[in-house]
Image (spheres, rainbow, N blue to C red):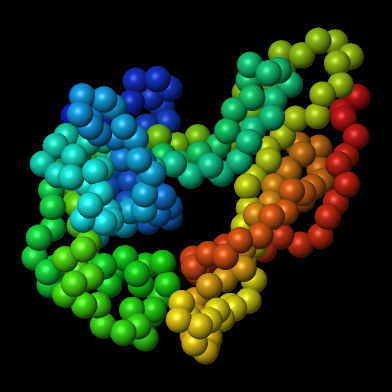
Length: 256
């Protein structure tokens, strides 16, 4: 698809960054499970963060049957957004600083998945998307748990993507003899070994647990050579992909 599927999905600001093809939209949704759902609750706008997954040309999210968000969204017009921050772009002026990102915006009317078999099947897909093979080693989901879970779906018919890549712009606009380092700071993740954790009931650890130790950091590329890695933090996640960053190179001197 080369044009916007609807007027409200058309990217107007910096429209050269717009993508309306399924491949781009699907790839971004598949790469980032965190989304934000915008809706109206009792006359007021609300945006709720949650997790989403895509199956074919629909995306889904779920939660407690008591969730006000899910109740308000069912049968209503919603806007779901997903954004991946790939890096901070540093320019020679504050105005030209930016970021590299991949984002998707979806408009449409949300619908509830009511069939228990379909709901279980989609929950299996979601679980295995985050933790490959995890569903088959868990105890079966109960009818009570399915009843306590509400699942909503949304067609991707009205969706658009917006992507920025590349170096800073306007870097030639610098005063004579001004010494400013500029480049790109990439957000990177380093995945460690699989670790096992004990169950909620204090039982033995599951030796097939899919938790992975992830290290977040910032990788800075300088246009005149050199790479700098800093700002490391850790958490436990279940995604099975990532980057490897080797070595630490000092920041090069600014250009003459």
